[in-house]
Amino acid sequence: MKEVINFNHISAHLNEEEKEILMSLYKSYHKRSYCLKKAFLYYRNILIGLSLMPILLSIGGVIGTGVTLNPVLLSMVAGGLTAQALIKKIEPDLQSKKVMCKFGYNVYMKILNDIKTYLRSGKYNEIELLHDLQTIDNMLQDLMPLIVEKYQKNYIKKYLSESGLKD
Image 1 (cartoon, helix red, strand yellow):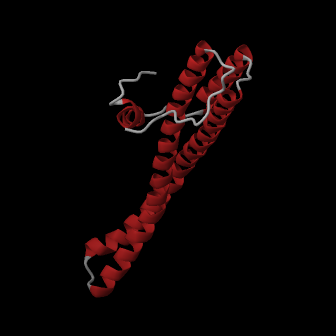
Image 2 (spheres, rainbow, N blue to C red; image 1 turned 90 degrees about the vertical axis):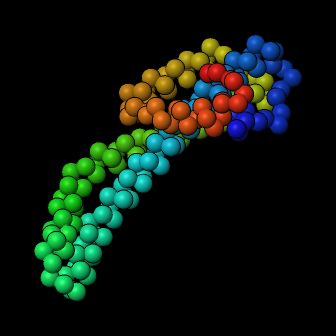
Image 3 (cartoon, rainbow, N blue to C red; image 1 turned 60 degrees about the horizontal axis):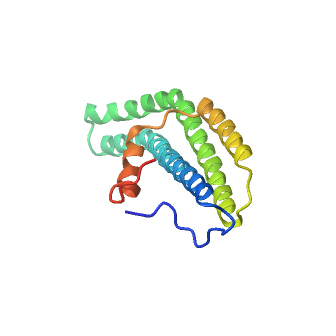
């Protein structure tokens, strides 16, 4: 299990309630950034696999038909061309999801850096911070694809399983 919060300095100007608020915000946004990073990597790997599939099918079919004139191998070449046509339909949707996951991840990482800065400096306006975070969350919820439950389960296994911490 890894530690979610590992700060080397927390300001003495913060009282316990302010520390608790900032720590809980940090935990919440850390989970969101983790899930979006995993979703980004998932979409990136899918796109890489989809771009390689027609090439591998075509090359395998061409090499196989050079050795033997098996009709199955000839259909691999046709399958490669069909897969390429299918990918052209699917790819824009996956590409937009990948870009939005990367955007959300970057926004949440900026929020995490801001929260760390507030913890270290001890100077922040709670009402303004919460309003800004709510505005950003509302914007991202409108733009983002839904985060799959499996990323949240992986996060719980990685960070919260042994410590018994909750969001």
